Length: 329
Image (cartoon, rainbow, N blue to C red; front, side):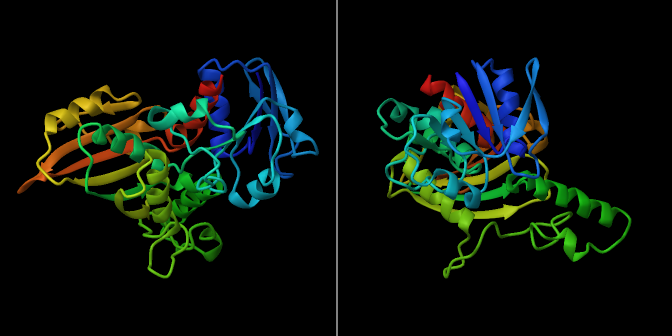
């Protein structure tokens, strides 16, 4: 299969390349696109070096499937009005809520790929993916009335410039210096040794872009427009690994063992019980979504709490896209 990557030099683009190699994806020809800043760079894939170029006219004729891992602003002029024959697996938010475009997590709703007429497949947000997998596993036992989720999102979720900025801020703080303004361009604040309770912009209600994404995307993927999801998203000074603390409220007591069994048997989820909880550092470089600290609320057995974490560059982004491509055949 001829494969193209738009945004090949970014964190997700490079992770996609690694996964294609790790998983033995059948790549007969590889085309790598990036910005003018990266044009001319050579990236090794298997036994060859591939030169990075900018997106050219008739770019869509160069591959059978493209992984698009660039910002919304870059994606729009490239893909809006797309009518080509190549599959496009897009990581931006541009098409996620378009009713004609499937928003896919293969373990949850991959079956819709068999019937879609759209050549664009949307890859969900990096926090939505692990969240909906766990919600789907829980819903196989009982549908919650409400879900309250606090997402703790790493710097790499904002891209390689964000990751570099976090590291630079740490260097200033390590020598006792104040972080200058030019080292706060991505986050607008100091993230090192800090938390930022804002990802994206706030609407008039005070809800952030990321919080709206988590709710809206989850409802679309789960095909449950009425599912009540209350989200709070915070950027944390972790390099790689997104985590969520989730609370599920049910109409009646739910059997903890049945939930545990559903999580254990769910594809792509690794469940850990008791004191064997999982941290973001443990998930870096791993493919699964890790779930631990499952428990009832102390005084209300209609309430469940659990902890979710995954590598946001892999299952939260690149791996999910590669799995979609594998499903397309």
